[in-house]
Length: 493
Image (cartoon, rainbow, N blue to C red; front, side, top):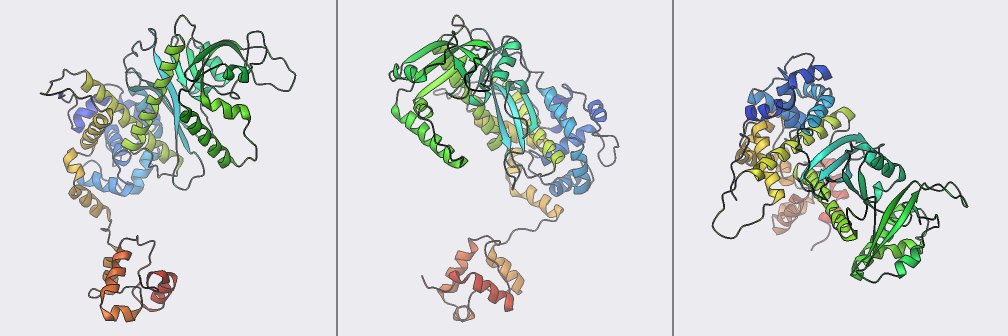
């Protein structure tokens, strides 16, 4: 399928696309991102620098060098860092302005909008745990994000993190099966479909009697589905307390058809339990529940039956694919900044480009297609987003996608930024020794022979990184390196 690309791959055309959503100049001045126009002439230049440093993959020094070579701005890497640290809130406004311009979601579930809610985490190298979390709502029918929030690690998953609209049907995994979050959904006029476990919620029968999980599980055969009317109550404060029910719901239980599915889930459950090192043993009911899929919904049976609810929940995996395109396609998982303001600026610039790619993909898919001769092939969303990402980054960096894949432009930028070309360990050793015979860090009696063994060892050492093997010209430091790496030359293969 061939279509005409809707956006001109040049920065002025992309800037016109952005200014139609938000007044960049007024918003940058109001947020404090651009109070003084020294070195950075306008808000469009600041946004271009943020995109070049973030999804463009340029370091601060390389981005400053590129800006000078391309005539965008003349500033140092320190000045660029200061500018980007102050532009985090403004970049968040741009990303938020790109979301409301979406058309309303299509009727995906019984005439209502279906939205998948989940979050993904990001961490810089050396961090202990999660540093940042992106809360997202994804529409499978439209293939796009309808809401995005960037928060710190202290804010966990929950329906209250996102804006909900009346009439929506929200999908969530076990992390969203919390009484307060489900009450928030019902108070907003929406409905939910969440996966639950035996201990994630306190579920009782309509008369208040605790649910007999063992009896329910024993009555189901492989591939069979059961539906129960239940009540959700708050978590018990103590034994023997009869708590007031919060709201009614439907519990749909499906026993997996194949036994291998439950066995795989049990292995995952035991592996996760061993990693926690809590010393607590798994309950028998928890192990038995791995053979079943349990979904809780507030939808009435007239709106969606058990089969329709289970089919809708299978669409939850679409948001995981969208997160994969964010991290694997855009490189959003390669966060290096440790400073909070720089990390927010870096992550928000990626979200801006992701929303621009989604806009372009939507226009491409809606454009009239010209069919080629032969059987029709489905459109690969991954390849489409990748092609659009390369085109938009080419517009930002003022280079075509083919030129970005070549090494000439990158080498020029690295040379201007002061980076040296990488050398192999042997060539680096030869450079330090002053040319001629390389000063290899193994015994001199082998290097004097000039046989095959030094060449063989040199080939082995060339595969290692310079940080793993120290290549020193000679003397005491050379003998110390030989002692630390005695295994390379002490024994013959």
